[in-house]
Amino acid sequence: MDIVCTPEELSLFKTIGDAAAALNVSCYLIGGFVRDKILGRPTKDVDIVCTGDGIELAHAVAATFPHKPHVSFFKTFGTAQFRLHGLDVEFVGARKESYSSDSRKPHVEPGTIEDDQLRRDFTINALAISLNSINYGKLIDPFDGIADLERKIIRTPLDPDTTFSDDPLRMMRAIRFSTQLGFEITPDVFQSICRNKGRLKIVSQERVTDELNKIMAAARPSVGLDLLFRSGLLREFFPQMADLSGVEIVEGKGHKDNFYHTLQVIDNTAAKSDNLWLRWAALLHDIGKPATKKFEDGHGWTFHGHEVVGERMTPRIFKQLKLPQNEKMKYVAKLVALHLRPISLTKEDITDSAMRRLLFDAGEELEDLMILCESDITSKNRMKVKRYLENFELVKQRLKEVEENDKIRNWQPPISGEDIMQLFGLSPSREVGVLKTTIREAILDGLIPNDRDAAYELLLSKAKELNLKPVNQ
Ligand code: ATP
Ligand code: MG
Image (cartoon, rainbow, N blue to C red):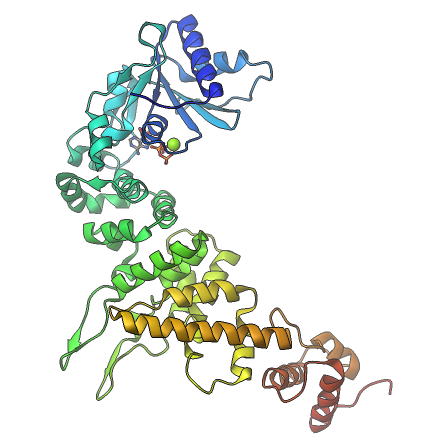
């Protein structure tokens, strides 16, 4: 098996082999590093397993370098790790594992390399390469992982029911690897995931969401999301998304399947941007549809207000999935709320003030909103998509023109609430809000130009209506 390593990697492996020999233990490269090197994927995580104490070996290896790298270790897990030449090098002692039914934390005892390979999740992750002088570089592949890499399949070393029941996170990992690598999960393994989906509840939400985010970060997230849905795993932790699925028919009229539409929108977005949170906005853009669905006589299916419902659902979903409760969440909610706005501007007779309002409301998020909105144009009818996209280009053009003229994006009205309070000797109050809004709306509607003098004049006349007088004048 030919794998390509850098000179630094080769010298590190030699050092590790020598240090292991001095300690009288055997050691091997294992897992993701071997898999990715064989596949020719970039990898910076080096996993080393040794028949003995991994922490001791890590220290012995680190000590051989002039700038001795700092070794962090976890006694309870028997693992140790250091960074060297941009590589993350992790050591663990070979182990044998047994599980009880209520936890994914195994009972662990020292074992052989074969025991250690048996505890690995998939055949393609159980490949080992010897670093010992007697068979340096030899591939140890007890489960035919190489053949599976060639056939591009994901299979477990043990009976899949055992593998998944022992540690149900592996079900998420199977789907994540399938999405990242473009590999197929064998039918018996997939059926086992369907059977064991209920076991996911013993896994912490953080770990599940980590895997979900790796799926979302892949080139085509739809692959994994579809597998999550079809296996039933998605409904276990994210029922709101599973609820998007299905088509109801009344009086011969159906609506589109919002689940598969959403997957298409995510893939379209992913093709244009690596931003994980923009992809999340794509995932959630129609999440309010099931709750707002109505069949209106003579009209067909409607989802009025689904963008508002979706915006409100976003924080709850972020909490449930243990996603960050910070500005990322606000960004996603904002895009969900605004996702229909750009497309509504493709109608004829759209005024500059409608354009200005979108520029103002979207602010810094305008480009991302436009990516989301363009990705949302999906239809089986190619001509329709073409026409929509052409109209959409016109909207982009007009937005650009209005923006250049008015400089409205990230814009603050020329007179602030502070200014108003000072001018009229007011403390924060309803009046200040009314005056502020009057100025902002007048500028956005194009009633007055975007400058201080015009705003000041309007402010004075509105204040008069409210019986307010400037102080010190
Ligand atoms: P990536 O780094 O891209 O996530 P990886 O395969 O390296 O992929 P890690 O989580 O880094 O995954 O784990 C390293 C190795 O440890 C895996 O290749 C696999 O052999 C083993 N492993 C990790 N998690 C599990 C698990 N839950 N069950 C069994 N083996 C596991
Ligand atoms: Mg890894």
